[in-house]
Image (cartoon, rainbow, N blue to C red; front, side, top):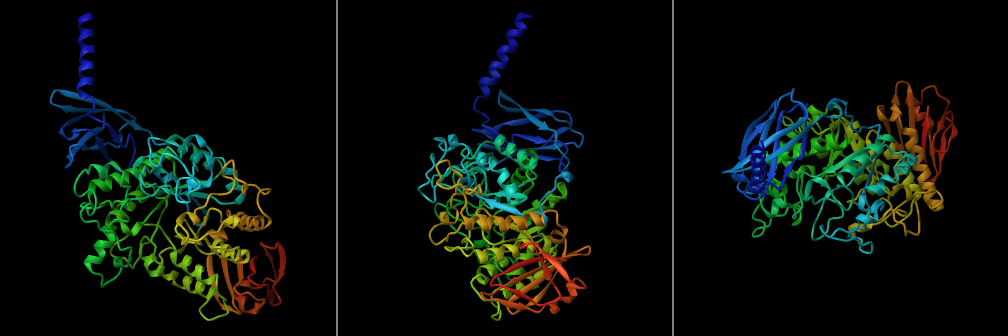
Length: 616
């Protein structure tokens, strides 16, 4: 007995010793049973791991294939999971000659079925924020010598400032007070970049939250607490590119893992012209430069046409849905990635999570271009993007121009907005288009000013039209800035997010009178539109501007909200009889902004830039 035990111990020691250094990590580190797609890709990292043979032992789990890439330091193992496979630990044996390495790979139960996960829609308002610039709840994670840059510096507008997930969690009540229903963070995954990447768009680890923001567990905990306060969380992802400090670029798994892999000798940058996707006369050269060129040198372009790259990315998105419970995805630089690959991702995601939602960034200001990218668009037929929600850059562009103009001038001001909505016939589903006034890549709506009347009117329009609205953090306290100063100038720290801040705009007492006026105005409309089917589901009928006044009605099941916007800097008269078809027999209504009863039997007089939302 003693001899047998000694032999077993020596065997374990030998296996452990011989296998040392063979495997650095496996991605994903665990998976879930009960997924519709039975295939599971495991990406194994380790020195000379490709020389290993692999065997699998677990009921209902089978070895499908082993893929050895050009680099010897990666191995792809494809498993098939029966639909009846149970949660537990799968025994994976990696053999190199006489050396063995046994890994126990965990399969977990899902917390809910895919059909039970509900995404964001037109009943929601997304509040977009940059975690590094919002609030520093844990100064202890500001500096990390294992990452680059290793320290925060608030004196540099383009450096890390120290905001984190704890800071966001500390202000969940603020979001409830404001009245938004969903939070969209810029990417939270590790961005360990020599040149710095406080914004998060240069991923260096797809399965790890950046330690300077928090941990995976802290991210998951934040989401659970947000759900407890009826707030959804939308995760920002990037399939088009990763960061140049990602291990994949330092040791390419294969030559076709990236587009234009000879970047050191022949760097090809995208031309940033997205029109070749739809241009019937586009050259192959222009299309390839746009689609395969790198965004910048620090963001190498991933090749989604490589099926192994695509499978890795698809699994990663599913993993974060299952692990962290995210309620939606915002996909960065959507048209820069391969159309067919992204369509395949969305098809699989829609099948696994039929009630989920993804919004794709497609920065072209023509409605026809944006409509091309929406699911079931006839403009793209016979292809189908399968992407439910697209971003309305046309609305953003028209609002940027209209705010400086008088709407009683032909084609100017709110006439631009009217014309923007005229093209809604191009969209398969206008209610699933996301509209916004500003974001982290644009000038602030207020630019360098403080035009509260213009801001109120723009927000009224944003929150009542037939769209999914998105606000940018600080809009409610009139944060301003221009990009021509620096990107950091439109990504300023939220005042009060750091202990030594002179102002705390998270509280009524800490805000100025003007900031409170803006906050209260926006909050009133946000709370009014919550669970308001007239806005989230209603039809829309709009009228040509009269005297520079834009009027439209949202109607649902006998209820009507009449929106009236004076798009001029002068007092204007509104001939009420022109709107009889939506007012019908009603003689009064209540303006939810002023909380006053409105007489609808006589013409209305509107003050400069006045906005009204009249419930009929």
